[in-house]
Image 1 (tube, rainbow, N blue to C red):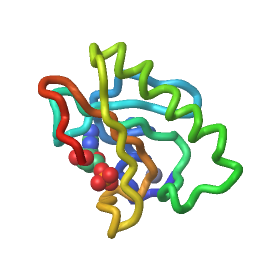
Image 2 (image 1 turned 135 degrees about the horizontal axis):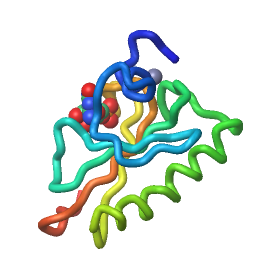
Image 3 (image 1 turned 90 degrees about the vertical axis):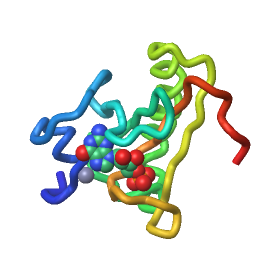
Length: 112
Ligand code: 5GP
Ligand code: ZN
């Protein structure tokens, strides 16, 4: 746990979030500023700064998170979705605890 990390505080329930999935390694909760009708984040419980801070020891965890995305998206009624991982300030990352965005619903998403 990183004491000044907002996602660590969500993991430990020190700040509230609309969590809808939790297991021993990861949580998922709705983004506070959604950019689509459904927009959630899948977050490992352990503090890892970003994708750039991952190594082979994180391989199974990263795979698990990606495989969870379609399961959770389906549970929330999405028929398709977009995933996004922002990495580093130049990559648009604001919260430095790795997370995968999953969003969709409503209109077909524009091509990037
Ligand atoms: P990033 O730009 O780091 O990839 O995305 C961080 C995301 O976390 C943003 O979409 C932002 O809206 C979301 N976020 C930041 N703080 C909170 C919070 O306290 N609660 C929730 N649920 N989402 C947050
Ligand atoms: Zn953290």
